[in-house]
Amino acid sequence: MIIKSEKCVLRKWNQSDLHNLIKHANNPKIASNMRDGFPHPYTIEKGKEWLEFVNTSDSNHNFAISINDKAVGGIGLVVGEDIERISAETGYWLGEEYWGQGIVSSALKGLLDYGFNNLKLERIYATPFDHNIASRKVLEKNGFILEGIMRRSIIKQGKIYNKALYSIIREDYLL
Image 1 (cartoon, one colour):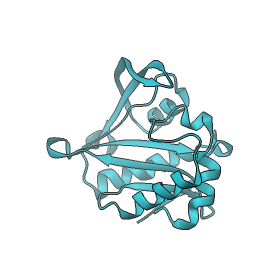
Image 2 (cartoon, rainbow, N blue to C red):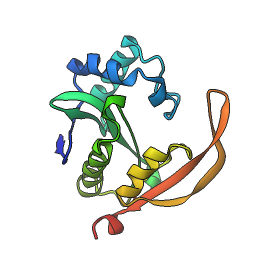
Image 3 (cartoon, rainbow, N blue to C red):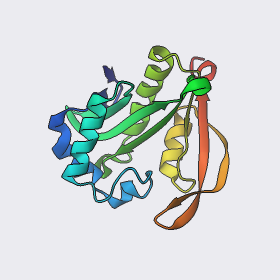
Image 4 (cartoon, rainbow, N blue to C red):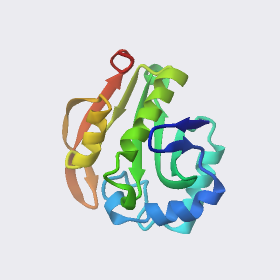
């Protein structure tokens, strides 16, 4: 699956992406706003594990954010199960040298098209750290609505934080 958006291409992760994955993901500024499953340092071993996971999972909706056929970040959907199978959570990250260029916003638009049109989802949501203003702006720019702040709901590096809950539903997206 290849998803072309205005500023980037979303595509399957390849084994040849290992060098760029490590280069861009091994950044404490990125890891500090990600779940603990996103390691820091981002080692070659962790990169190999990620590439193996995304290339062997049957329900994989994780894409490399690619510019000039080089992976510079990642974006994906985790589709809910059972009664939540019409919803998916999105998450994303981007190499620091590409920040502030509208790339994630463009990638998210492509992912929303994929989620609503290909996967037939009804709702896509995200839960950024409350203090991650850049990520929150990306969501708002793409039509996500703030549903609330989940106070003292997460812990990162021993510190407790709030996280925001944003969502967009099919009928609002397709307007």
